[in-house]
Image (tube, rainbow, N blue to C red; front, side, top):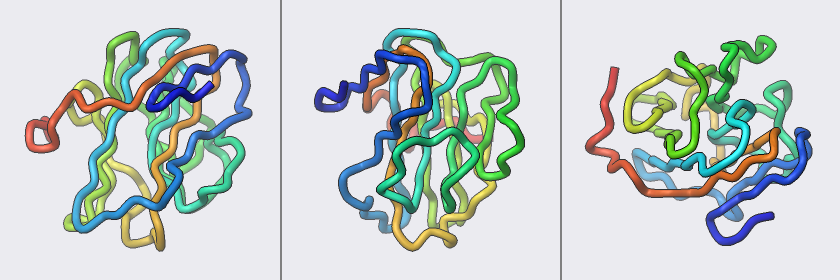
Length: 155
């Protein structure tokens, strides 16, 4: 169920990816984030993709795509375009963020405003950019604006 900026997943499967309706307009830097509201916390992807029509995302298809995968066991099956969080999984109230930076030609990921990793894909590889998230378990996430870009803690 999608209600405005909130996504509530009611079944456990990789059956849905939620992709922005229009390509993102990016001059130099884009930052967006989601908050984990409820549910089991493994199995959340957040990132950018060039494919607005993907029906699902499990980390093994669709290029170019670059995402962070919130996974408490630290592995995702070897897709070089997906980055794992370096710490335990995000829990209720945590915020996962994405920076798409054309100036530095890098994609960076954040948890609660603190840097967790760089994407393996470069922004220069994308012709168009869509924000996306994909969730596996019964959980609720929501688009949010909790951390200002200028306040992010980099590596």
